[in-house]
Image (cartoon, rainbow, N blue to C red):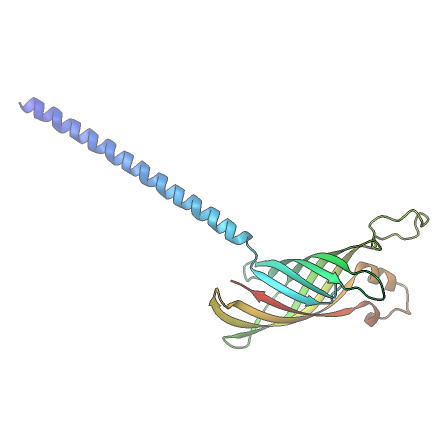
Length: 216
């Protein structure tokens, strides 16, 4: 009888250990599953646009709007994709523009709990214009070397400032609303001004105004 009890006790001991191991494995699998889902959710959230901008001028159309992202240790970097338009003027057709822009803000001055000032923003962007009169390769009607640049694509640089107002952090109001201005120029203007004393800085620099809305 004692031998039977010992065998049953030993069996129950091993069975409980095996069951504990299985429970531990199930728990670990569940934890790994939750962690994986959390990583996927975080990656997806990072991919979602976090801000929108509306801009007037800036060599990307009369008006343009964007979706974009801000990131970095202090959210000092921004990447924006713009869609703009040049309206019909002087009998010529209107044109659509696209722009990819990177902006860097080295520091931000907090004026109070709800207002901050960005004394310097620096940007670099590439802009492309679509339309019959804006081409990428030299048309056959021009001799070789007549133009050495593509008419429909420009590389631009900009500097500016902005002021930011905090909003109620809810899905209804969003996070921040900013107003900014920038001075910008492009590669063609700079090349044209080099060695040409008749071209001054105001001739190659333009002013643009914009609004930035951060969702979250």
